[in-house]
Length: 111
Length: 209
Image (cartoon, rainbow over the protein chains, first blue to last red):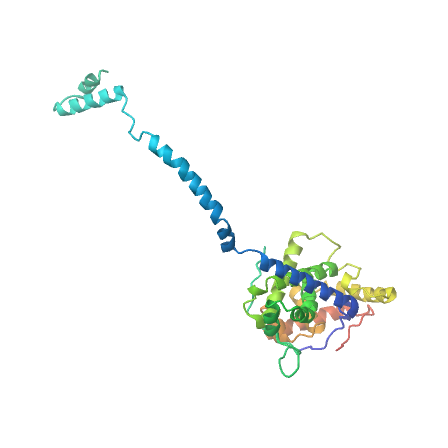
């Protein structure tokens, strides 16, 4: 195989050491600054821990609002409308009356 | 967006040894950098920034963009050094970041700068105080860039890492996820195509180093 090298020195960015060393120093400075900032950045667990107090305060407020509402609201179910109750009773009577025709059902509900 | 996953590659370098008073190996430098050691970071940047530039150049074909991407990728690598799970394979991890960021840039902003492989200006880090010297180097660089346009991304990366950066085929193959034999094949093909293009251009197509 051909192992002879072509001369790519014209593309070598480090051929002049002065500007190249500046670039290297700049990359190091930016990288270390970014790393220091990343280390200071709180983790997800730390962020969640930071929200602990506001979350507890919000939960307490919701509890204070919810307790009187639950105490004073009537939990009894709404009564069935009178018209619907009559129809239900008529259907039950018709069913208990023994063998009959469908038309009797209409008579029973008053239709 | 391509993900930046640490590949299973190892990058042994000729100067990457812990023997005697020689330079520290990558794993040692990564460990020290994690502890905030600026000198370790400087050593790693000095060791691999040019290779990062070469990989970016192979993908982007634009020296300005390649320099920007190589620097940004290195800044990100330092920032996220904790994510480098195998510190002795830092170079392969870094090159994956560079390659992915270069491809993302090429895919998202294809016409941001001059036509790839046809740019005619030296990147910021390559300027010297002598404008005449810069002009001569710029002409040579233009011819090389024009010739490099004739080969594929992977061939460009192989030939630049081998000829300019001095990497061995085992390292190049590991970085690219191909075999050493395939790396040699890519180099052979790239050299043939490049020599065809460089003949008569007056360019240094011969050997060096």
